Image 1 (cartoon, rainbow over the protein chains, first blue to last red):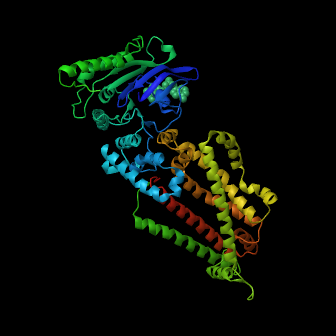
Image 2: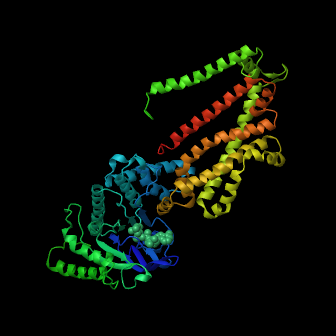
Length: 312
Length: 269
Ligand SMILES: Nc1ncnc2c1ncn2[C@@H]1O[C@H](COP(=O)(O)OP(=O)(O)OP(=O)(O)O)[C@@H](O)[C@H]1O
Ligand SMILES: [Mg+2]
């Protein structure tokens, strides 16, 4: 079963067609980077997946469930305004647990049992904040946190509920380079947890779509890159997925060596961002065939050789 | 130099100095006036104040049938009206403001009407209250409540529009919130500082509306007493009441400031 399924989704604002026949399937535990020229409809697609602005055509399912309004199945981290000013870092993270596991009447009328649950929630929140490297700032309000800290809290806030999928819309766009790198490493750690879960035969917990305008970032944190763009033969109908390929997986300990990304980065730049390079939109959409090939390769390799480097 | 900070002791000393200055200036004025006319009661001396105060706190009625003092009666009447009107007006405006801020169809229905009604000076509507609700306690409550209501409801509605981002609401839905939870846990918590700030701003107008109404009708209350006593030039009583009103406003102001600091530690503006 796919974690997320987008079937024939199109979207228009009035007469302006933004998205045209988007189809996308995402497996549990994938970290998918989405890139595309500014204004091509990335945020529009995310809002459709989130359910706040359902698409004008087509349907989106999370783990088989149709999405038509925002719900706890899909989480989101915005570039800003993701946190509640009036809650401390740990309360912000515990907010979802509170909303999800208790109700307004129960919080008022059975205060004692709620108070007990509250302690559990806050403990879980603190544990998660430690995991994202924020043990020092748990009692502080968002206004007292740096931009990088805020985004860590926002990511913890979204993930602690274990939604089917979490959308990150340019989450590191407002951060300086060093902070950005730290947060990228954090995502890679999540990915490692996914791999471990898969090795144990469990369903991986972190499925992510991250929108970014940094191609290196996209290729570094993700295991799959999709490109959304209008630069294809049916441009007037709106943006389509014009690029969908696997990309190399880094572990947090690997050196940040982007030289092995050069080739794919240039390919991406041409396929997604080059206005003059008009092509059939399916030319670079080869994720699933490459995956099938890969598993065949892996199967033959497993028969002869030690395990391959690229695990998916 | 502009905005150069001054030490704390100096700030306190200057604050006290201001009060002393005010009292001294009054004494001098009063003394000069008395020299011109021995029986003047417009700027009475401190002795006259003492007499006026004594008259205010003397129990009324006869020995068989003792009544509370004038001051007690007036304070009780005025504060009770103020509290009842203010409380009613604020409670209603919170409900209305949040309803308008949260639901688009209520907003579309009521926002234009409300902004129009908020523009009519409530004191000008006094005659309508006389006709509709009479001149008893209900009239004072209605006067204060409605005077506060329109402005307050509008401010709350605007605070929601300005301070509660749509993404915050969407975000809460993704965390599993229900509609009532969004109203209480997101909208209400976010605008609470603005609500308290607006309460502070409304105390002044509320007192204006009530005092104006009391001056026109009613047999007790501070507004009524101020008018009656000033007619016979008992200015000492008038000044005492004005001081009490000033202190009331001041205390309410500080009380709400303190409440805001206590309830909203996250919002230090
Ligand atoms: N509410 C709206 N009404 C009308 N047009 C809109 C609306 N929202 C977005 N658009 C238009 O739709 C197009 C896609 O917008 P969207 O925000 O999805 O792009 P994006 O890929 O996220 O861009 P960016 O990289 O700048 O964030 C843009 O041309 C934008 O002008
Ligand atoms: Mg965008």
